[in-house]
Every structure is written in C-alpha cells, then in structure tokens.
Image (cartoon, rainbow, N blue to C red):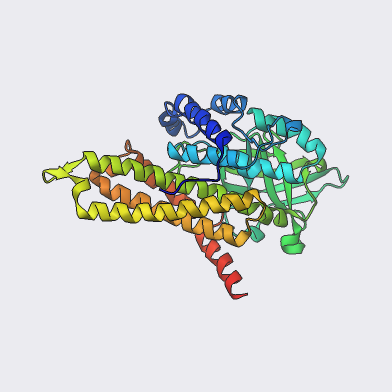
Length: 382
C-alpha cells in the first residue's frame, strides 16, 4: 500500500474528529433523511458550530483560514460513510469560494460568518432546463431597473443542489444577452425575496437525502449591491473555479470506491457458496486485484492533484482528466462490487446498492464526462 504524504498530523486529527462527528450526528439519521429528501438544518448548524463548514474562510469573517486539505478530509469522510445527502461539498468547496474570491468587503462581512457557523446554507444556480452543461446558453436574464438600483431577474434553474435548504443562492444570469459569454454575471439572491420561488424537491434515482430543486425567478428585484464581482465576468469566474469543483467531486469518487471495495472484501470473505467462501474463487480474486490496482492508481493521481491545487497549479485540463478518470473508476468499481455481492447487492439496505445509485450522477454534474473529453481533446490538438 502506498503511503499518503499530502496530509499531516493536523489533518489526521481533524479527520478523526470529523469521523466521530459523522458517526454520532449523521450515520444514525441518514436513512430518515433519505425519506425526508433532505438532511436537517440542525445538522448543518451543529457542523458549523464544530468548524466543519467552509474552514478555508479567513478569520476576519469567522473562519479558521486553513488550506483546502481540510475540505478534502470532509469530502472523503462523507463519501466513506456513504452520506451523500450532506451538501457540505457544494457549500464549502464550490459556492462559498465564489464569495471569498469575488465578493466585496460588504458582501463578505454580511454572508461569510453565517456560511461558517451554519446559519446560511448556500447553493449555486447554473443549470437550466434547456442548457445542461452549456453555460454559455443560459437564458435567465438580469436587467437593470430604470433607476439603476436593482437587477430584475427572470428565469428558471433546475437540478440545484441544496436548493430546498439554501438561504443564499449564487445565480448565473445574462446581464447582456447580446454579448454571449461576456454578458454573463453572478448575482447573490436571498431566499424569501419576492418573486423567487423554490419548486419541488426533485426525486432522483440516488442521493435521496440530498435536496435538489427547481428554482423560479419572476421579476425578482436583486439589489445592484448583490452583483458578485464585475458585471459580465461571470463566465470567466465560473471557468476559474471549476478545477476546485472537479477536484472536490473526484475526492469523493475515489473515497467512495475505496470504501465500497473494502466493504466488498469483507463480504466475500464471509459469504459462502458451493461449500466455500466467495473470496476463494479465482474470479473473485482477479476482480479484487483489478479494482485494487485501479483504485491505487486513482489515489496517487488525486493526491498529486490535491498537492498541485494547494500550490495553485491545478490547471483546467488536468482537473478535467481527474474528474473523467475518477468518476468512471467509481462507477466501474461500485458496479463490480455489487456483482460480487450477488442478489444482496441489489438490496437497498446494503451500502453497495446505495453507492451504485448515488455514483451515477458523478459522471454528469460538474461538467459531464463528455465535456471533460472535449476539454482534454481540444488541448491535445490545439
């Protein structure tokens, strides 16, 4: 086994603490959260009080200002336990960093402390019913009012993670429809604003405890002060932040694959067929050998990419390669592990069944894997 060197004792202590927190506060409740279609607000609040939300936020705004390795620990441990309903990754790794990177001092003072302590849950609204991965095709519009004090926001979004619970949504909208991608801007929209309606909590084949919603905006008056960054720079901001988003997805992908593989090894050692353990069959050993080798390769790659990210050197193409490979590996490993469980693998009470249903979306969000191939291919032939 290759020893991981990217983490130090401080992150190991943080991991032990967070793992204990999940065992006490999440694992016993996740089945109920699956029935509810969302985790509880109380859980988010407890996580904030313990310092598990947005740990990279500067101390001036209530955070502890540590590096992204702590976010990585959170992503890995949530995946290890199969707690896919917990939307910390979207909040801490994707949405909050936009406010940190592009927010005004007033915006940071107003929102970041709540993002850290659990009072404010965030979401980012990119995807629309007719656009999918085509962010340049966004139709949601935001036009300045006659007095120039507000944007009038109109449009709809779908598949929005944390959509039901979110108190603050970063909305991708066209402030200049005639300018193409250069007309895209980001707006901070608070829940409860007149004209902003949260649609139904969408029913998915997996991630059943994760609230995923439609959002509707009809003549929503968004203060001009809630423009995030510079008008027209939204598309560039999105592109700059995507490597971290894809790293976050990949961290959970590899951790999930490792966890399910470990559970499967235990299962085949105990499960008997034809008078012996399933683990004694050559086919089982060959399958385990293939999966173990592949997961080891993925682990080395992702740890290197995490190191690059800490040094601000993780480029979009490498992040695309990482997301493509790790999510494919996750789906393949979970599928093979389910097969080794036989009929029991298809039963919902077995973690491998949940992992099978949960894993599939990993190849879709954060840019479909087809988009990843396009990014990589264009870089190769440029």
